[in-house]
Image (cartoon, rainbow, N blue to C red; front, side, top):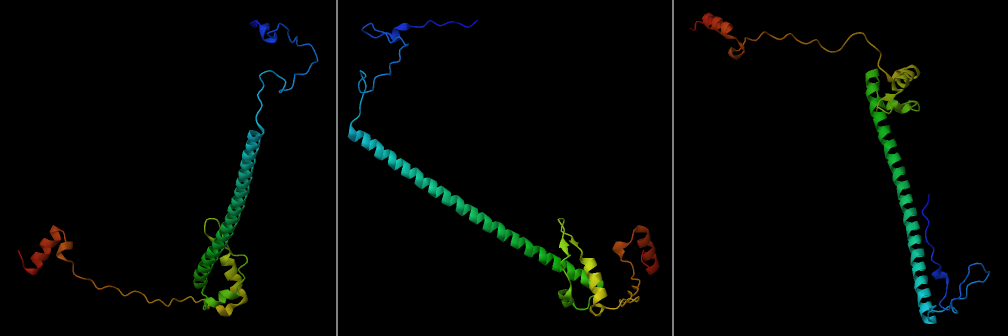
Length: 189
């Protein structure tokens, strides 16, 4: 059960004994007619209004400056993103060209300038850095322009390595038994 408060009626009763009653439709008296109401001088009110106007102008200036700074930041961010995308694209093209040159050499291309004749539209760089479509492009180029490639041969042009002559073993490479045998062979003790 809620606790009931005591209501003091003394706040509704004026010093002359009359009360407001609270039930009438009387509107409160204007501030100038109320006893104890303070009024401000016209000069003071004008000063306050001028000060308020100054603050409003400063807020408007700050909002304008903030909006301009935000627009400038957006413009700079957009430019930076465009430059980054362009640099990323150029770097990918360089990687693709380098990988294509290596693949062309492996495929037997005589002159790497022949890559300028190739259709590179299907050659892409995957997310893991691998060039996709290079082998297919080189196969198609080999079929359409076989004069750019060497004829495949079954013989190798690399000379076979010469057998190395047996060098005598150094004393530092021998174990104790081998060293003892070698000493006995050459007449040392």
